[in-house]
Length: 193
Image 1 (tube, rainbow, N blue to C red):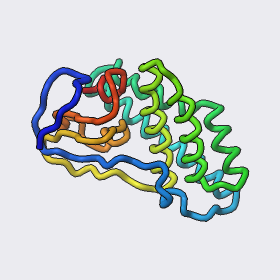
Image 2: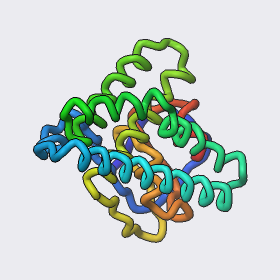
Image 3: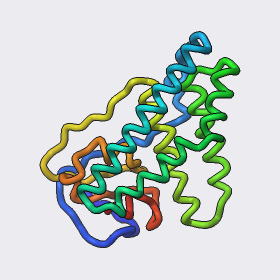
Image 4: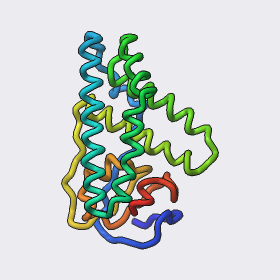
């Protein structure tokens, strides 16, 4: 199969194509669980946030080891988003009002995406992918999901858009190329490529 697009990073790579399907925050299956007691939901939220922070710490260490300290720092923007008191307050408030953790995560993500999608600066617009990645990371822990990690020796990641969450489910040493439909030169994925 041949793909055409705009380079966001120079170079080429060959390998077995691994496709990541587009993640849909509007999928009703994400939020179909009935809410538990508010204390239970609060606990689920805290566990999901803590595990997401641990993921980001591990990813930062891995990137720093693999590519250098400046690349490990890429994960700090996402970590800061998780630690932001406004984000935590928004999620907590929604849970307190009776939403499931999953519904609160999806709702908060939609609110932050709407705010960033109105920006015209390409650097800030690219942060949309960070927002999706952060909330998807928390959601995966709330739903206790894991990403597939079995890969061929050399792979090319093909996706509508690829998140750092998906990339870190892979062994980055095996990734020889990344082809995405969405994303630009300011995205973390392009910087890594």
